[in-house]
Image 1 (cartoon, helix red, strand yellow):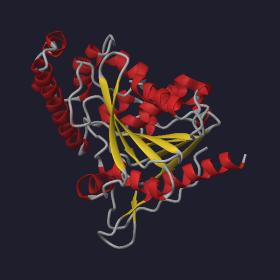
Image 2 (image 1 turned 90 degrees about the vertical axis):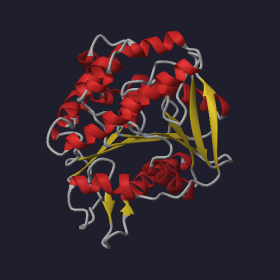
Image 3 (image 1 turned 120 degrees about the vertical axis):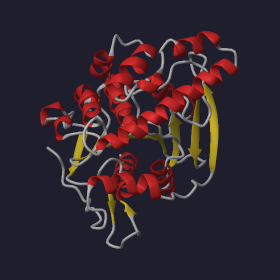
Length: 335
């Protein structure tokens, strides 16, 4: 059953869209201290950029952003700062092409792509076999995280994980973005994705990757796409080996993996999230006993802003996520 939440929305951000848009547009998160970037060569000859906050031997938290996000997203930078103040290091996985540099393959990233997070995890584990590792994912990154946790079962050495605002059933979420005010989010996200693909094509041609560039050219004119059903069918499915959009959504939706998770995991979802409906929320019998489901009535999509003074927001997610991780790291140390 869902657990009691401590979240109380700010009265001056009274609906889901204000909760969603305020941090996305107005949050000025501090630059994380003690910051550095590392480029890792992936097993398929491409690369991922990882942005670290903190040095030393403190516990290390892997962070994953949402669709069209990056390590520079305000919710990522804010959480890195909060984790640093609680004695954690962090490592942000920029999904391919999201770090400010296009990757060197036609391959992109998507809601079910778990190879890169597993590669980063293995890399960090080899370097620091004794370090307590945790993971946090937002939105698309949360779907990737939950799917990966379910795929790996008891083969992971993680002390805890947190997933926030997760599109647990991708098809339902894609349809939700076709209705009402949610269409505004869809328009903006699709515009950014089309720019991402255009920049990637130009990059591949510039570096002489003609075969990879052709894979993108063969997708055709993307300017006519106006829904995620179309984009995921025309682009994601074709570039990543799915037969069609239905196959992609079926295989990549994370709800089916929840029962297999063995890592202590907090899943935070808002009922009023404009990217999804209540229909995506799992039934109790779908949850692993290791999952703590926290459902709030309000909070929007990666919003969850509290505070009684207008324009003096308190970012509840930073506090709740660090609180959860601190609780499990204390338990681990005391064992």
